[in-house]
Image 1 (cartoon, rainbow, N blue to C red):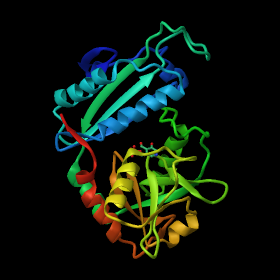
Image 2: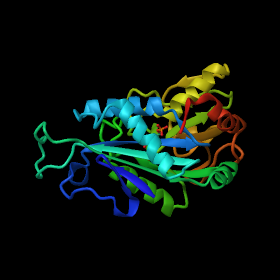
Image 3: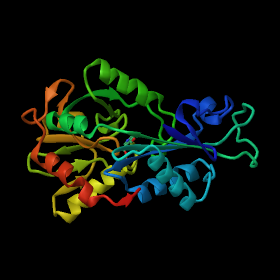
Image 4: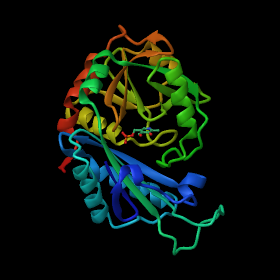
Length: 285
Ligand code: PLP
């Protein structure tokens, strides 16, 4: 396997970052994960838009021009011969003697890009059955709209889910409303077939997959409402699912051990999963 690290393509096993990288010391950096589907990058444009936005919010420079970065993404995918999988990019504020305040402007942001294959058959099998989620109290900071590598609450939540035999943890805020999953956006379908997801104004990362699903909903004239929903409403819903570049549209069939609907993936959820790649914007590797 090959990784891109600060200007060089290196063997993955030997790829390394300096011990004074601010990503390592302060989680002072951001990342993106883009799906690779049948030899195509999925929604690269939107992922790069969001990367630029995250960097802007933290006053970190783009490590290189956007066109050059796009070339690196494609090259890493090509060199790793990935047809279906994920490409990961991470930008940190760079390497400097440990000090909380920003380093001098001469310090270059650090860029790492990796790619790996996934097992589409395993993902398809999982989607056939659907997954379980547990709920956990929301304990993250207010700027979850920035895709930072500071993911400790997400790590702990997802570990707790795993130990409970579940795939994802849904954060629930003090008002009993679901914000999002540890690495996914949360959705429900009401009894009268209305798709519901939380508005991307607070409490969530504005998922790219979420946006593609909203596009599908619009194109197909489905009914939807962008509003917060409670954990209780989710448990009583007809269907539930989660979205992310890593899982696309994944049916949720149990919440805190309670079946959603008939305990099987819902019709609308399955249809959205089937349609997904026809709606997303893809660019050939
Ligand atoms: N919410 C969180 C906290 C995430 O980490 C992610 C993706 O990693 C998402 C939502 C889904 O975003 P996307 O659809 O852009 O992958």
